[in-house]
Amino acid sequence: MTEAAPSDPPEFDTEELDHLLTWVQDGVVARRQLRDLGARDHDIVRMVRRRELVVAHPGVYVNHTGSLSWEQRRWVAVLACWPAALSHQSACPGGPRGGPVHVAIGLRRSVQPPARVVVHRTTAFDDRVDWRKSPPRIRPGHAALDLALLKTSVSDRFRVLADACQTKEVSVADIRAALASRRRVPDRALLEELLDDLDTGACSVLERAYLELERRHGLPTADRQRPETLAGHRVYRDVPYAEQGLVVELDGRAFHDNAAARDRDATRDLDTRVADETTTLRLTYGQVFDHGCETIRKVATLLERRGWPGPFQRCPDCP
Image 1 (tube, rainbow, N blue to C red):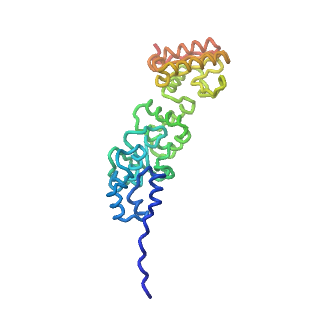
Image 2: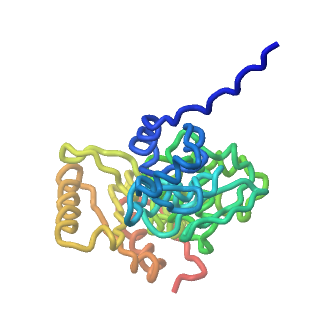
Image 3: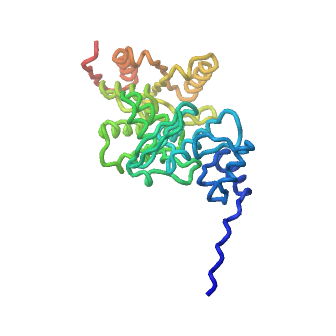
């Protein structure tokens, strides 16, 4: 029997490489991917010599010289630590577009990451990754939970969860499911309480602080974030006490620190008064955080004047 001739190595598929660089990976490619496309060592050496590819990290290349974009930094981080996925703030909806890139890898692996890449060894790694994303990333419910767990204060944890949910890319239910899937989670009861508060409609740290004041002093529970139509527009009220015709709007400084924003708020308050005689109160950070008991007592007085039977309950911090 005649021996079969050795098969020729596969031809380098440069068209597929162009597609990968242009349409899939933002100009970034790993050496293993080049080899899968049929590139041999001398092909890679030639492309680097011609500056068609530039080394971004050993075994990872970018198709231009100069600084890397944010998206390219994320691809380099994932491919350099492969198999890996974006994690924490780099995978959390609404996360920053800058700073260190955070990636997750399997629990038993060890890698040498590029500069400004933070690696997290992760249990149940394969189950938590959405491999369909580009780059692959930890699913948003888990990413939000991981990022919240890095924070030490209750308000910072709540802010992470609230900011993620406000993007509409992740829901309270998604984060609950991620929490339920984990066997060991520090402060599980606290996280469940924060998610409960998000479910009530408290969508910011300021709103949650007011909710706590409301509970501690026995005020009626408002129907938070209920949609209404006002002057032809859909609006969401922070804290509407419908039975008493009183609405509390909680104004964070970041969103109400210019004349145009104040004008919009005043117009909405006027439209509310014209539409249904509802009175709107606007409370600031200082009124809630620095003078919370005094402020909530005044709100209770207005509610009593409008038919709430009370009683107002003093708390240990009340003056």
